[in-house]
Length: 403
Image (cartoon, rainbow, N blue to C red; front, top):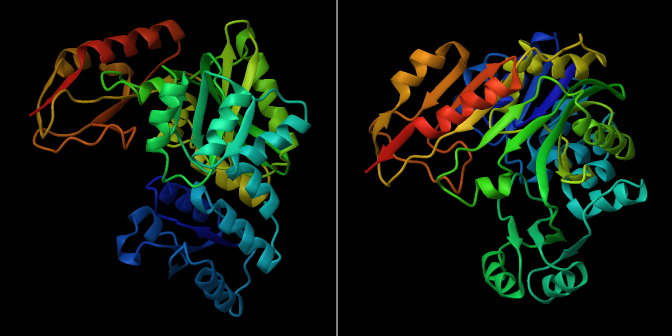
């Protein structure tokens, strides 16, 4: 099987998906923006061929693949980086290949189109509208009412996402979103936020994961002092999660998703109601696939590759609650010292899977621009209360300083 992989080395996790595809026996043809010499080793060593071409230039990409198709058959086109999911669909249609169509890809990229499909399927979504910055946002806010959320129609993560509680706040936000061409204006749902992540093959859910955001992402990006946590839950049979799991499966059916990774976010209200947030035809970011690997003692990069190439994969079960925590230094400039780490590692080190903090002397990262912030910890434990206790200690006692 010859598989074209768009952007096989960026973001960095893509290299592991590229490697996993090759390890199934597929011949992987990379197409991406990075010069070949700049690809991570995991990608370089597992590509049968690489085309260096701008992914923003659709005609150039199609021309490169038309040329390749005269010499080798192309069986599939895969893309796990959200900005180019629609490009992958256009290539499939142009080369008459199986996989997600352009209409389906649009549902996953356009938050308004996504919610319209799910509304028609009877799935609970926030009240919503699409709008351009300016008068259209004001009109949508008047129809939906405050509080509301304003975010890009085709965004990823929580970039350019704002909670708005009043007309005065909306006026301030309007000044910050003028660069966004099309926005989603929707009802603010007050509740806890979870994910529903899957690997699918031939229309079946082969693996599913529920992660809990602590606190919800909008709060994570609003307060610098917070240490954001994504917690992959071992026990998804607890009753409070049932509505979200059922919703996730219904969403996949409504969007006719059959093969690959998905990452859905949903809200759990105080009264137990599950409300859809959004979904991407991609894995979760911020090293959450690593978190799920530590939760399952498995390799989900390979699970995805097997699902893509064979339509099936061995069963994967959760053995631990596993969490990532991102740390933000106090101060500005370069990391000057780290406090509390030695004590925490002596007492809790057996539960720590990954410790990846910026070294002393490194410049601080912009916490508003990247969730990775100034370092991360991945830790795990079979007991949920214990993993929450471990996280609380790292949040309070591990401190980075910059000056």
